[in-house]
Amino acid sequence: MPYASATTTPEALGRQGARRPGRADSLRQTYGFDDVSLAPGVETIEPADVDVSVDFCGLQLAMPILASAMDAVVDPAFCGSLAELGGLAVLNLEGLQTRYEQPDALLQRIAAAPDEEVQGMLSEAYLQPISEELISRRIGEIHEAGSPAAVAATPASARRLGPFCAEQGADIFLVQSQVSSARHLAAGYEPLSLAEFTRFMPIPVAVGNTTSYDAALGLMQQGAAAVFVGVGPGAACTTRDVLGIGVPQVTAVADVAAARDDHLERTGRYVPVVADGGMRRGGELAKAIAAGADVLMLGSPLACAAEAPGRGTNWGMAAPSPTLPRGTRIRVGTVGSLEKILLGPADATDGTQNLVGALRQSMAALGARDIRAMQRVELVYAPAVVVEGKSWQRGGSR
Image (tube, rainbow, N blue to C red; front, side, top):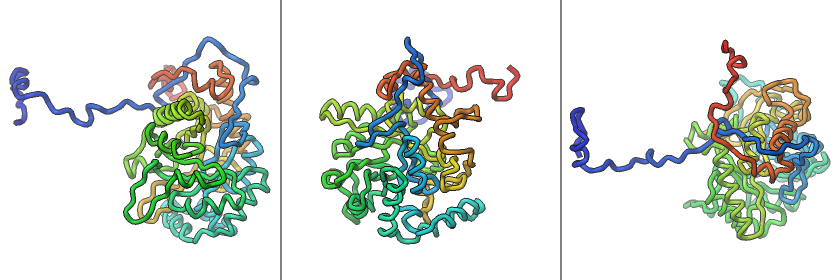
């Protein structure tokens, strides 16, 4: 069909036939945290009457907070500190804690390295082999610190490390990859069979990450004890820039939560949904739960704690790749104790401190007595709600 000229009439265009729809014509509207707001209902309650506890893979947590399996966030001591406050930290089985007997000096060098040197330093640091002896020792140290041992590995390592960690007393095993699916195709090796893996593992197996209803439903049907949601939203993750992959978190969480509810209706088994990444302020935690999340996994916000091993920096699990990093080291600073970040009192006014206190206050203002009730509050499309009336905060004159 020839191109239409500037003088082509509508009648002539009609004779040439309708335009073939392009891929952009069917783009689905998706929503991130800045696109939505929580609408008050007809009831409010006292914050003290709000219950933010949750059952996660058989563990009773006093707060719905997990710490990301990032080397700059979690070590055994951090696991104990978060457990004391009521949350749960996840240790990266393929990180520095299982490669080096004493990783503190290396963590210090990575934190202090100039930006132009850090990528090479990360790549070199992660060439050290993983030690099963250190994995066993770290699981013991986590228990000694007073926390259940939740550990994470990639699918390629899960078949070997999963049974070993279960034998060493781990409580939860997380199979975590950039994008998880119930069916992985590979020509050069036999991929992990999730259904077989979950059937024979004596401890709960959580799986992530995904953003899709269909993929999440498939993971649940194959025995996942929890499903993690989020591809690329983390502050230290560059997947969306490097690979162009990702779905805004509100839509992603809502889609996976719909799969959870359908799976529950069909089987009677409830599979918790974990919103992983993209949350920095209390309001974002509240929106994630309203979208359908049961538990929230935080990385960079907790890397700001004095107890975090990254000393005010953070980087993702894929950052050390020597060929195609999907993460970068970022400087988040150290703002105070873990307790201050999660429970306050806050001395910052931007919502980045007392995160659980803000969640509790939001739930109270919306009349939500517990996490399940918060999942039923009204979400509204409100892309201007963050800036509405805030010109003075933003340096404006009115």
